[in-house]
Image 1 (cartoon, rainbow, N blue to C red):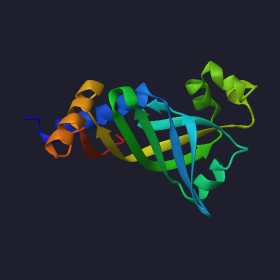
Image 2: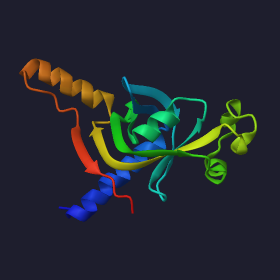
Image 3: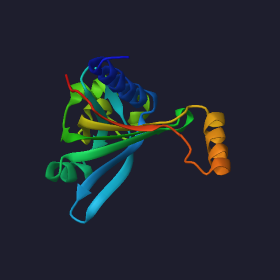
Length: 169
């Protein structure tokens, strides 16, 4: 049986693996009237212990994050039946060096002047808590569990919900 330290390390590794496998997700921020979500393309950096995004100064995110830096980033990997919700502290800054490091060619669609575009910003999330729903990756296994539940009247086992604190060191 693995000790607590290695189990935690495995969980943290699984979180970063999911983040690196699917970069598209939904960022939720708070504003005066409630919550607002929008799709973004993440650039996770396991070594930095942070999730980076390129964003535009002309959007609402900067003001919302400045007022309420607690955010939620949600990623799904349906093929793996994995669902991940990360809460963390966000900040937005003009950071051309980081922008160059995380730049993808598709980004030029939004920022014509490249990573040094005057409207470009780097949004950074420092993860605090990761909540992971990790189900059976096989659709056949999931279908079997649902069929079995229908027959037996018992709840299907479609994975476990594991809440893990993501260490930032």
